[in-house]
Image (cartoon, rainbow, N blue to C red; front, side, top):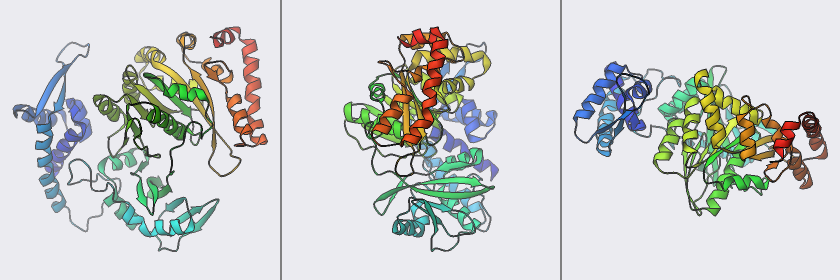
Length: 479
């Protein structure tokens, strides 16, 4: 059975990746390099299945080979996967327990068993949620589903969920990529689905070592830049043709809404091919002037890095990325920014921290090169802070914006740790808008209260004191 499982993983990983080195395929399929080499050698001998390209590595010795499956090769492997999966399924005793953190194998070579099938497992809970007007449903072992209704938590009238039932549902719902995400970082998400004219999403998390489920009612409409009271400079960034635009902030700062609004601006004003790489998809964009393809991590693509590579092969002109969180995704985003517009979230408390985090993904000997590459491709940064709303419970996003021009780029090049970059976000010029101005606008339109605005006014005073004490940043800011 172990040999069959290995052959299954090799074929499935190859079909999902389509382009790979031997090392890539070995890592994705959890196989040894010798086994992988035998596998690709067999494909290479079969006419029309595989293409090869030598990659320049800058090191002496044998070149690294990049393999590309042809359409004929994909069809061949796909026909081989199903019978292997069938044999594997028949070899597993029905009574054997399957942990949610174990690999979930599928007879479908591309999609996995659970795509689009999670709604039926939670129908009764969603019916109670709809009846109660709940926005969220929480499911954990030992009690009925809990409903979030406005600012109250209510119990549904359904039966308690057992740990065994949750695991059984997830076994039939999650695909292999999702299981890998859950196992490595403790959470994963499913595709949004319609229930009773509302779109719902699912997130699976590990709590106390056990899986729990959260169902969330998704927004019905995509917000515009104007709806969110974002600065007009955000719209200017959405009009860029190339470069990297970063949305920085921490959880609940409004980055997802801002990214959706920027995609909406492109969609309504330009005839482009837009690809979003999200986990999960929160806002669904309908085709307007642009073609919008929304791909969800762990469902449509294995991860952000492979999704970026695929989108570039598809000649996407605008890419929106839900998070740059590792070396591979940053490297591919920087390469893509040379000829496409990349709008990407980076989790960091401030813009300088976001840039340092991106550089920090790389080993020390590469960091100076990456720092210069980031500065060279950076078109702008939107720094978002979530404020207490005047009404409702969703935070209101205040935004400080910097469009990166020659003056800013020079400052960044001369400042290896980006220490002066944050000051740019505290002043107003034709190419910058401060957080203070954004807060004043939100208060003007009754989105936040006077007391909430007052909490942030100290930042303006602190920034002005810094500018008085540091003539060089002040002069640079005038550019």
